[in-house]
Amino acid sequence: MRDYLDMLAAERGAAANTLAAYRRDLSDYLAALARGGHDPVAMEAAPLRAYLADLETRGLSAASAARRLSCIRGFHRFLYAEGLAEDDPSTPIGGPRRVRALPKVLSVAEVDRLLSVAREAAAGDARGTRMLCLIELLYATGLRVSELIALPRAAASTKERYLVVKGKGGRERLVPLTEIARGAMRDHLAHLAGDGPWLFPADSESGHLTRQSFARDLKAVASAAGLRADRISPHVLRHAFASHLLQNGADLRIVQELLGHADISTTQIYTHVLDERLKSMVRDLHPLMDE
Image (cartoon, rainbow, N blue to C red):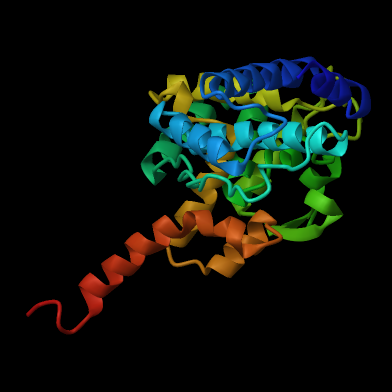
């Protein structure tokens, strides 16, 4: 095990936390093999399958089991590549099925409460005006938080009714702007001092607001609005943007474009919203439902 971890550190530059997690995972795995009388350099797939089954009985989540299997695969591949084992028993092993969790979503009423509190705090206050602008923009556009905090100052003075946003992989997309969002940007711009390049400047390495600072301030606004802090984050507002559009009849492909998803399978995490809307449509519109 030590040689494998040394290889990860030297050749792949694994971080200390990663190495510590791998050490714990491998120690648990090797201890299980030892209890069963199995040698990791001369074993078949059956003991590994039994170990994975035991992880499930221990209550390990599918995500944690998948991470542990990835660690074990790397270990056995290392043994095989170094000539210490004649075979790799992890080759025929399939990973545990990971159930994709539904996104946390705020109701329209909860977003209204959040915005109401932010508007009250924005009255004559530069910091409050900035926070209101961030929330209005995020809920109106569904931007990724990394895209939002790095908006250029010129975005606030555009005459267009959309933003041109460069997302993941350098892909550009058009994001429509509501009048409320445009007004929030103008109000925020009026409170900005100096003439730097960023719409949300800050004393940080990047020169603009950090994700962590925005998330912390957003939780404070949520708390003032009577919302639990663990239910709110910038990404939750992005989820709310997508879910509320779908609830009101937006096409999934349009939402995919607005979110900047390269593959619609990523957007399909919101199909639980569509499922409820389709059930409602059948219940309300099908001619036989009254019989």
